[in-house]
Length: 339
Image (cartoon, rainbow, N blue to C red; front, side, top):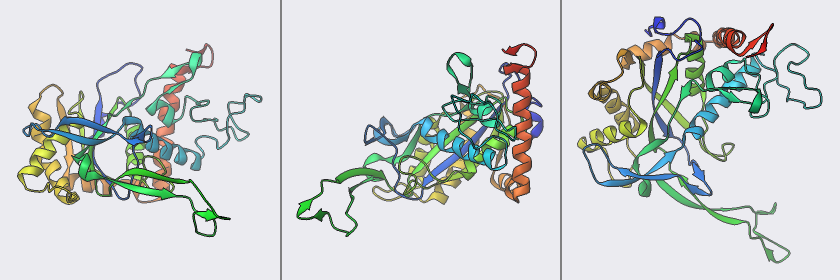
């Protein structure tokens, strides 16, 4: 099981080198949109660590990964009444609602004390800021851009189901590139100096989030396959290096066929097998535990937060206690005011 002694008992005011890495294989389950300025995000990089030919890959920028996960967590915080469901009112200037719950208005007025604020950070101009304790980076597709995207013509018909009314044809027709289903993006999420309840809060957000990118009410569903949890005293591999190593391994197995999706189970098995050597070859961080395979499956099956709503509530409340303790000690003091 996961070694909970690795995590600090309280969030420290300065970095203490307690790292926990969540290693994922993100799989698109529908046509997704990861774009900037109307075009899919891509990068021209080396295909693998051994395969030196260049390859254009689809990318998911860091905020397009963490923002949906963060919003899922905030949804739970409101459901279990850790934060208020009310929006911040500039005229009233109230910091809490009538029930005494802090009003935490995303990107408007953060409460600074909930698990979301303490783990993912916040910035409130001159009022203060908190650096994120959840690190992420751009994720790269294993397969090439050419075989991982598809263009669709989109239209907005009238209620009659046609594109014309009274002899006039609407101009509401557009073409948009989409990421194809079963496109795989290896990804590492790193947390630093979080208590075990706050780490579980982040892990729960990742496992619960199902939609990413633009137009999430209609498309963008994704499955986050958890491959491993790695506890260490520093950071480990990058997303790009992880993707390139997996590409080399899958290519040797003959699992990469142009214009064909990679079998997710094959990719998961290969990624789990190559992790020990990949994380050891560069040196640097000392790994105290790598939970994968059956050990990881047993750990997830035993988590109370996945068994019942009561278990989820208990995890959320424990994370809230730790975040409020950090807020009281290092962000706000009743006698001195804001630090």
